[in-house]
Amino acid sequence: MSHLEPRPFTVSARGPLRGTVTVPGDKSISHRALMFSALAVGESRIEGLLEGEDVLATAAAMRAMGADVARGDDGVWRVHGVGVGGLLQPQTALDMGNSGTSTRLLMGLVASHAITATFTGDASLSGRPMGRVIEPLSRMGADITASPGGRLPLMVRGMNPAVPIEYSLPVASAQVKSAILLAGLNTPGITRVIEPVSTRDHSERMLRGFGAELSVEDAPQGKIISITGEAELKPQHILVPGDPSSAGFWMVAASIVPGSEILIRNVCMNPTRTGLITALKLMGADVAEIDRRDVGGEAVADLRVRHAPLRAIEVPPELAPSMIDEYPILFVAASFAQGRTVARGAHELRVKESDRIATMRSALEAAGVHTEEFEDGLAIHGSGGEPLAGNAQIASKLDHRIAMSMTVAGLHVRAPVTIDDASPVATSYPDFFHTLDALGTPR
Ligand SMILES: O=C(O)C1=C[C@@H](OP(=O)(O)O)[C@@H](O)[C@H](O)C1
Ligand SMILES: C=C(OP(=O)(O)O)C(=O)O
Image 1 (spheres, rainbow, N blue to C red):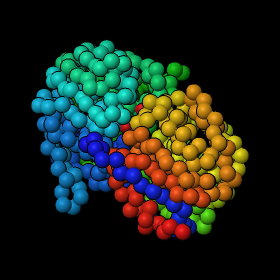
Image 2: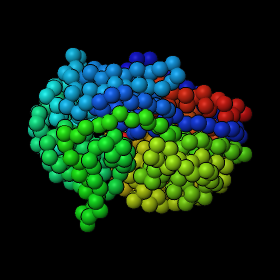
Image 3: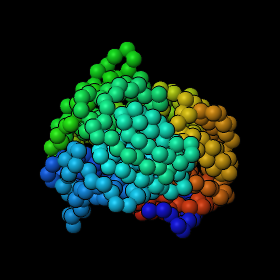
Image 4: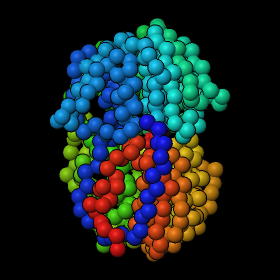
């Protein structure tokens, strides 16, 4: 799973970008589809699963804990689950690769089963904080031994029966929320998570779809999500909609490269995920939603994006949870806007696959963009639509979103940009470079 060989990639000005793109399945939904199917009794079928390294790490972990997980020649994944409470002791350490979502959600699952699992990961994942899940899961009775700083490698000794808790999230994190709900699935009684700031709600929607007893209540202190434990999940047929985070790269590419027009098909429009579209529209981007429909309980639309002059904005901080993974590509859009864009209230970016504030700052500065760094964000002085100087070496720091964002920046430059290692792109978007080739040729 780890990237032994760095794969450099050089990008030079291209365009205009024209064509139709179908983005891969949503990463958050794909992880959950595998996990929940593995806990149902019977066969679930999953269509449109993202076959990126992060999701494959989840598939391997579910197999290691007893589920039968296989991809058919028709591209449909079939999962025979073990039932809630039925996870088996994995025989070797679970290699989570680069994936924070796999790690935190699976720690929750293991926490309430009578099994012990060791979690390992690559250098990026081993630097990310796990204390945020260790704390609530320990309260539920799990015994967790982590490396210094609450990092990987770590070992979770599950407790069965675990103790239900009521827990108010100290950080806006769908991973922490989901870890607790997953632990609650196999815990007698009602486990409650209070979410002062709403985050992506795929776990809630999908757990309900699988037949779990889960309620969401609006209260003065936030959303109260209650799950009744010792649940029985029924197998499902899941259609995974396209990933709005992956679509973001093409939205910004079309917006900044003159003459471009891209139709992006089948994009998940769950309102907890559409912050980038809101921000780009505030900047003057030409994004049209076509044919809004429902796919497997999620809103989906096709998006037609045309080149348009962008203007700087103050990015509303309340958008942060609904576009948390899209800040790197938003910073690229801002680099081509007229004026100074300010994005603050995004401190969480410091603890993603890389420190995305520092990494994007260095990358954009190297490519000729003037930026100012804050503890919780960046200010970016845009080019007003002119190409960037380019002529830069970019460190992707084992971070797929940095590699893809700086590739998009490199589509409108005076001199080529080289990404030192583009291999992390395979974690979330294995076809990214093929799709780019199909959309436009070097000028
Ligand atoms: O629950 C999820 O699927 C995710 C939640 C977010 O992380 P946090 O929970 O750390 O905000 C996001 O950054 C990640 O890519 C996927
Ligand atoms: C933060 C991300 O993923 P994860 O936390 O699952 O590694 C991401 O995909 O941008």
